[in-house]
Length: 223
Image (cartoon, rainbow, N blue to C red; front, top):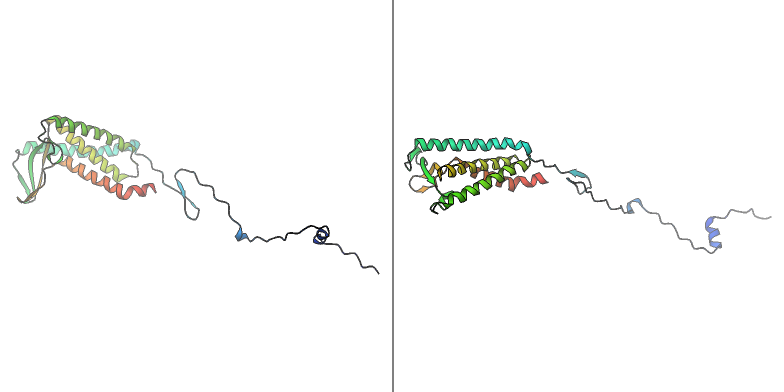
């Protein structure tokens, strides 16, 4: 009795035909290599190590809001000119008036040069040199306050104070040919700091604020 015909498997048919079979390899899902992620090109964003997108805060310029900082400059300028007027009308040249002994006097003095009387005896040309320098610096600060980031408030305060002080001393040079100083800090007769004014204070404090912003805050804004 003939045996019933059994259906041949595909492998048996292939072997009889002389074909060579390559065993299939099961690929684990974990072995698959992920295709590289396309680089993100959107401005103001970055990828974290885990591939998550984070947005960098967009910096907006002061623009018309620079007017607020110009008002601060006017406050510094007004205070400077008012105190200089008081010094001119109430004090006698080079006669100290004790305020807090032995540390602070009001002493009227004229500075024909720059800070610490630099080039004070240059012959007169320094008036126009320092006036032109102050004018250029003031124009630069006016424009810079418009373009400064709105988030950089400490920077704007510093720029505004420097602007007010620079214009205050510029007015002195153009009107009087010298800068009016009257604040005299000293330690008895042992040590004397160069006599200065409110404009000098505004410039010094403003520069200090700008440096603090550059060292500690600028990187945080751009990150």
